[in-house]
Length: 81
Image (tube, rainbow, N blue to C red; front, top):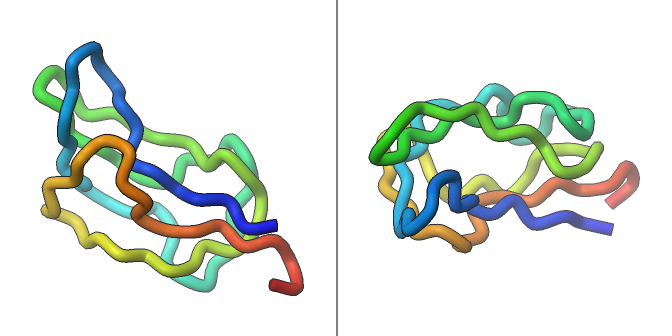
């Protein structure tokens, strides 16, 4: 089953965040709890961990993009999907 990667709210009242870096490339395997990306908020830079184990896919944003909280920005596919 595919898992959506969404832009999380990392501080109260946060509406957007800036993607600083993906730690994995599309097509690479990632483990649940492994650092997936770094996001800049109005208060700090935060590493965001993967919520599932699988293959990173469908990346729709690039470093430097400002992204609204709750937007789907990638997928993590289960093995065989």
